Amino acid sequence: MTTTPHPQGRTFLSPLTSLFSRVETSLWFPIGVVLALFVFFSLMTDSFATLRNFSAVSGQAATLLIVCLGATFIVLMGSIDLSVGAIVLLVGAVSVTVLNALNIGWLVIPFAALVGAGLGLVNGLIYTKGKIPSFIVTLGTLSVFSGIALTLLDGRAIQFNAPGLENISIGQWIPRLPNIALWAILAWVVLVFIGQRTRFGRYMYLIGGGEQVARTAGVPVARYKLYAFALSGLLAGFGAILAVARLGAAGPSLGSDLLLNSLAAIVVGGTSLAGGVGGVHRTLIGVLIIAILDNGLNLMGVSQFLQMIIKGLVVIAAVLVSRKSGADQVIK
Image (cartoon, rainbow, N blue to C red; front, side, top):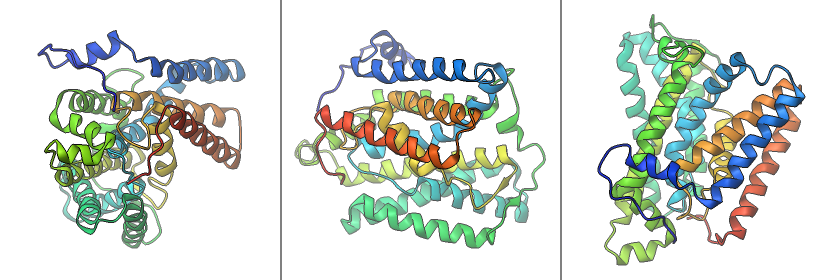
C-alpha cells in the first residue's frame, strides 16, 4: 500500500491545505476530464454554462456526494456497499412516515441519520459476524430495505408535513447555491479530515492494502469494518432526509440512481475497488464528473437509455484504469 505522508501541522484545515498544495499526480487525469466535459457541454449547449444551471447541478450532485463520502470508506477498505440507494429510500420512507405521525420537526434530521447508521450497522454485523462477502450481504439487504420502504410507501410518493423543513435543502444562504450543496461541502471537509488525520482513516487504508497485514499490526479489523458500514449508513441517512426536503416528498424512485452513480463517482474519482488506494478527497472529483455528465447529456436531449450505456462504459473504463495501476485483488 502506498500512502502520501501527512503534514505535521495542528490546525483543523491543515489536511486540506496540504492536499491542495500537493495535488497527487493520479488526480490530474480526472481533473482534466472535469475540465474537458465542462468545455464540451459549454460548446454544445448555451444553457450549460449559466448560473441557473450551476445552481441546479450543485443541488442535484449534493445528495450523491454525501452518500459517496461514506461509501468511499467501504471501497477504500476493499469492500463494497450496494445498498446505499436502498438505505436512502428506506430512511426517506421512515422519516416521512414519522414526520406525518409525530410531527417531530427538525429532529427528523438526526433521527434520519441514526436510522441510516443502524441500517449500515446491520450490513456490517452480517458481514463481519457471518463472514459473508460484502457484495453478497449488501446485495441481499438492497432487496430487503427496498421491499420494506416500498411497503411503507405503498408504492406511491408521500409528502411530509413539516413547515420550513424544506429550507435546509432548497433555501439559499449563499445566493445561487442551494443549502443542500453547502451541507455536502461541509460533509466533504469533515470526512477529508477524518480520512487524512484520524486513526479511523489510516486504518481504512491499512485494511484495504492488506487485511492480514492489518491484523498482524494489531488493528481490530472487524470493529473498524463495523465503524465503516455504520458511517456509510449514517451519511446515506443524512443524504436521504436532505433529498426528501429538497423534493418535498419520499417516493418509490428515491435513491434509485445512487447505486450506479455512487460506484461510478467513487471509482472515476480514483479510489480502487481493490482497496487501499484513493480516498474521500478524490470522490468530490468523481461526483463532479458524473453530475456534469448527467446534466450535460440531459441538456443535449440524449435519451435516458443512452445515458445508462454511457455511464456504464465510464465505470468499466475507470475500473480498467484502476487495474492498470496495480489493483488486482478481489472485493471482500
